[in-house]
Length: 321
Image (cartoon, rainbow, N blue to C red; front, side, top):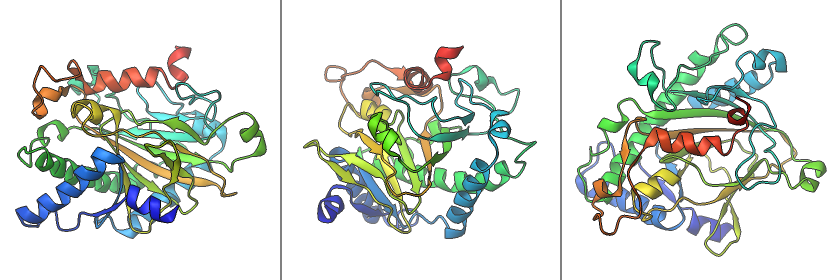
């Protein structure tokens, strides 16, 4: 299993991309492209996020989820995916039961008068200022640092596609980048009997996911042969995976791979994904990445509309309105 995991989910060192030569950048770009075309998952090392930021992010997550239910419910999740989601509200499409997890959602901060508020998935954040006034301040540095890593990956992919390195830059100036704090209680025999997962098999909806996971493991990726491959934590790395929207944008050249979480560690598990997506109004059209109109498999759609449509099928708060 270990050897298979290492070959299927490689580690890509991006440390020389920012200030490296064009040849160094292209080497990293080609490594990312190769795994994005095959497994759709890779570890990122050399990302430059200080360890104190990742430790603070986990400490903040544990502190937030330790609040009582009533305090967290004061910022109950809305249909813009902001706020706290109690266990039982996330039932992924095709699953027999809800996921055994709690989530706090936040995203790119927008002003109350921002005209983009009319766009799908653009909204003010729901910070628990009364019960956890420290949350925004403590999460923001990690969020910003992770978005910077996402920007490097997108620059590398632009080179890999034969485009200018800054091809995606404009659509990421006000990104639809959403963070999550995720809490998974220990898996139980009742969960097993109910065919419940910590996170049921699914693909991610957007362009890129950048995941920080604790030391408890539980993430598994489905290989092309149908077998489940462990994606354990590797010290000093993030896990990056391709989402449905980038699979679509690339005309299925890149692969959005099914994955799941089963927390059999016996411990509480914490993870912090950042879904790094472009501006809500970004037109997602394979033709913009060099695909001919004759071979394009998809009609254009905006990023926000696509992701909002996916959310309505997977989260219960949409059906309750």
